[in-house]
Image (cartoon, rainbow, N blue to C red; front, side, top):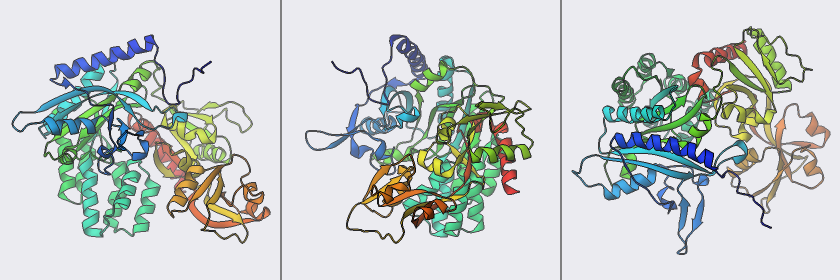
Length: 540
């Protein structure tokens, strides 16, 4: 008898769910058609080479690959825009006017299904080819908002940025500081997009950047909020004309969108898809804290296909729209704080108390998992320490306090706003005293942190075997299970008592204050108030 199992990260859709999702799709597509867009479809399979360019699309590790009978590598469609751009470049004829295309398709990407990620999801969107203007960009944003409102989603907020603000800064960094290698740019892009202020500060110190550039790097991720105020400051700190032009573009788009739309700006908004080159925007549902759509301008992408053709568009995640339509609205007035019980939690509760945030019912001995402060503005939710990142990433909690070790291992998609300075230790490679690497054979590494271990040794190109250990990892080399371990080291006493010593330090560890991407925008004032209080406590 066959087992009724399906692969992780995918799901059957029953008829009730399908009918509700189909209703959303129909409503969205009707709005697109009325706006003059015509529906197309691209193949489910595409050549790997279409997406493998570093300047084009999703990480190649996130693609599902197969080899056809001719030995060519193909992928399941990991992105909707790139194939449509290829199609438009092939069929667009000069002088034929603008081309307005719409689509409804499935997208396939590798995902951490253990954290609720989906390997396959439904996406609807539009792509506009032929004109580059703030009027067109505003029209695209308004079409997205109209499609959502007609589908029953009204409590929206729109966030706008411009990729050229960051790109302009990179050009200045290259011309004035000589920093222009792709690896460094990618690191800076990742840190800025994640609003990783501690990481950005360390980056500036490592590169020895002049004060002018350091100040811009540290301020750019925090330039978000009301458009007129933020764009004024963004213009003041811009270091070249490209950055100033990006600010002017945002102002022009905002004027064309109009005051009836709830819109904010984020000058540190950088899409994970590298092909965006101008306006970028995201759509949030305030009552759920979910990012349900995004898009922008990608004129440079068309040059990859031999066409100098302006292009812009957006995509809506239909699966996510359906899911949030079934959820109860979130409590907008309360900031939920994820904490893992233990030493970090005890220190954090004490820090909050010093800042005037008191949880009257909280005791270390209590088995309760949820505590509300005396003002009703904050709520602590106790979860397993390893789950803090997931609770914040998925929006179940707005913010969290998590060890940098756990954050690195979970790779949670959150904003890393503060290094809180407590819970200090280091990540390190340790082994029995006197151990020397043997480069002639594969290194066996035992760790509770396989992701961290893999990434560390990958930098040196060393061949390793990872052995995941959940208990006392110090035992592994003592009984011959591994050659070395990768673990956190605080005092080093446990290592010494078991005859081990640090072979190589990896990185410093401490408690970090993380924020859900949507909560930072839809609960901006509450979250920033708490961030300020936590920072003041750290600075004491």
